[in-house]
Image (cartoon, rainbow, N blue to C red):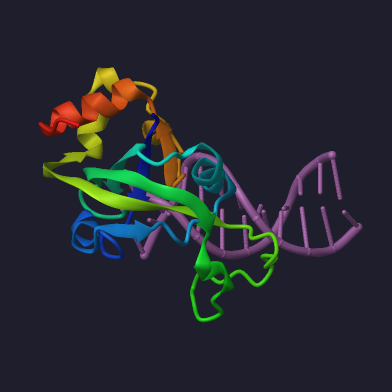
Length: 154
DNA sequence: GCCAACGTTGGC
DNA sequence: GCCAACGTTGGC
């Protein structure tokens, strides 16, 4: 059982959107490290902090769960998609994703500022300077601490 | 294989 | 809108 943090711009796809649709393919990730996490390391049942980025204030809005097995991101082959990748081989797709399902929306956003203030969260990847990764691993102890800050029990 | 130029992310 | 950080691209 591993823990993750996934970033999303809520104007594009928010925790409320996930709650509404229940399950969502995490399409559009075009970074190899993030892809490798989804392809190689994520297992059904893993939990992820759902982080709202590029809004004021940014922060963790809730929790999602990995469902099913990794599979090729269909948007890479869709010429009408903004995520279309003409160079991805059809017989060996470059971009692999997993689906996430809704688990919980926190009563209150746990803001980035709050995360930074917590000594217990020192070393959390998303807090490291210059980290732009949209999918990052989270230590179990950090995951649990963020849930505690939110007043939510896994 | 080096590295400059360029593009993107995302907090502020 | 600015800009720091950093990944990618492509010329050599």
